[in-house]
Amino acid sequence: MTGDWLTLDAGETVAWDGQPKRTTALPGVGTGIALLVGAAWLVTVRNEFILGILLGIAGVTVGSWAYLSVINTEYVLSDRAVYTKRGVIGIRISESSVSNVQNSAFSQDALGSVFGYGTVTLEIAGGDDIQFRRIEEPETVRRLVDHTTGEEIPGSLEQWRAVLDEVRALRQAVESQAS
Image 1 (tube, one colour):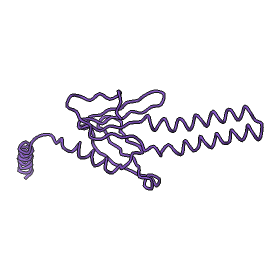
Image 2: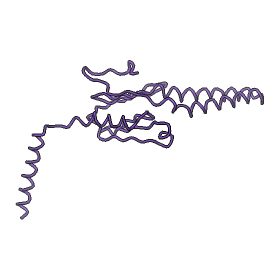
Image 3: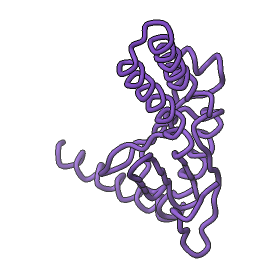
Image 4: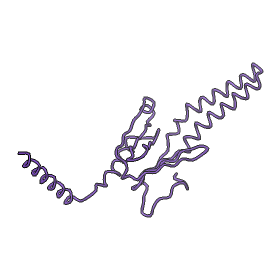
């Protein structure tokens, strides 16, 4: 699925990739079809040719835009970075290192709960949040993000023990001066 828009670094591997669930385009496509039916009615029954053509163009535009915006959106989680690609006319690509992911959450609205899709939001340090919108199994993807980002704890156990010893020594020094 990841086309020529994504170039991974040497040794970087894809942990997950996905797109919005295609059925999430149905409301827009349905609206487009309803507009086309209205356009056909205007032309055939009411003889409103110009208004019918305009409504038909609007129907095709709405339905096509809804579908194209879903199929032209891609999400990738690698062992090093998070990527999104969106766009029908222009393409917008967002990228952030997994080390910059500060928090993650997933949400599902009522329709998402019924039809099995939701949104995973990644809070990025020093940048805009990244969202994987209307994806299948958002809770599983969020766990994968947490697993991918959680492995990079800076420092070793010995270094953290040394920091703890230093903090304890500082605390003891402050407390002894306060007495």
